[in-house]
Image 1 (cartoon, helix red, strand yellow):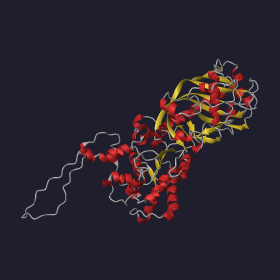
Image 2 (cartoon, helix red, strand yellow):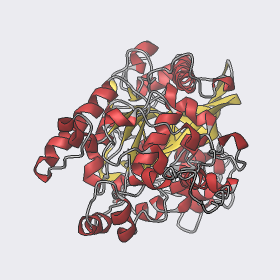
Image 3 (cartoon, rainbow, N blue to C red):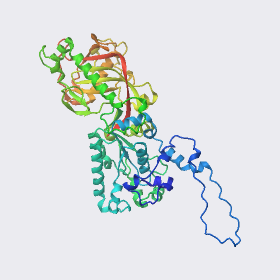
Image 4 (cartoon, rainbow, N blue to C red):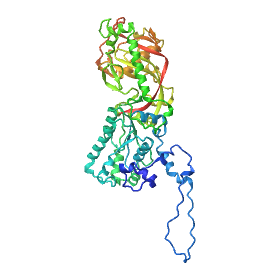
Length: 544
């Protein structure tokens, strides 16, 4: 474990050299983590006062009186746990609902920071909080030859040490262990790439943790505090080369796959009475059943068959095969898997690993960095929309200042290839002088959605564009034609202009569908509006 623990809890460390996997299991941090969030120090934790050891003196000698040592004030006895609470007050250590997510789904904590910054102590706190934790650290490799007694570093074997750590992490991920902690420095972005690829492959939610200790980038303090005697020059190099790591996108996630379960004797908040994986199953099942119902409606089936170039008598089961599942777990029954398949999520900001416009500013904002430590929110599922390109779930975000002003950056105002004739001219002041809708009139969060299925070779970003076409029609008071009432909601048909090209990729043209009753260049998008929205708990995170 890191020197953070050694300096703050010296009595729990017998020797600096005994920091191997064998010693790790013997360390007891219950007293430290039990005081997280506790402002009062119980008297029973007070240590007894110890008399100084003295040499025995014959009684016939005159002995000067020795004053009894003064008792240490109680608050000093607990100064160290107080410091620990201040620096490890992370939601994943203090929030009981999030604890259920961590142990029932799959979470990977990826530590980042120079030696001595406090990474390993946070890893130990996670281990104390969650007994099923697996900690993988390249540092443990240097204890192998001494059977856990001596740290024997060899710069020529660094690659071997990290490969050993990779193998342990891979084995843990294949077993579905949660949480999985990677306790390495991970200074440069490429150093964490193996682990983020592993997380994506085995459906782990990644939380990157940099210690919040004041000295985390103070080179002199780090050189003094680190327990592996890393020199000042090496630490200066690590601090100088520390890189920010940006994901492919930020967003709100549903859990994708179940992790290993805690023993019955160990429970973290099960009294809350819910399983987050049930929400994922519920979302996928409802969306699939709704899609089957809507496509099975006679008018919808005939129109989609015409758009796909099939006969009017084509069964709905055949029409459903037009889309590929875009989710993991798989959406629907018998659908092929899209290349873009990922865990169900609402994209808040597409950052393209830091290369997208505004990615750096967004990723470094205080609201984002704090929320990445474990921010749970409630969103509403309000309906389903179906186009020839995409199938998406419509989401209503909370009317929360943090979410709508600081976390949501979903490009609600994206410009689409829409003209006035698409809505029969009934814009009532909604059009600008150019004849295009005033995109800035779109309300914040209107693009929030979950991509469920895609037509072949269609990018997931097209789901958001299809939803914006619906929003523009609604803002123009063109709500569409009523189709049918089904259990739990009603279906309408919205007429929009077919995009000649994708707004995301103007070079690649879309094949224009031809519905049976639309004018050339126009198409239908079918919208299912729920009578009552569904409520889902989702986690804000980055997908790396």
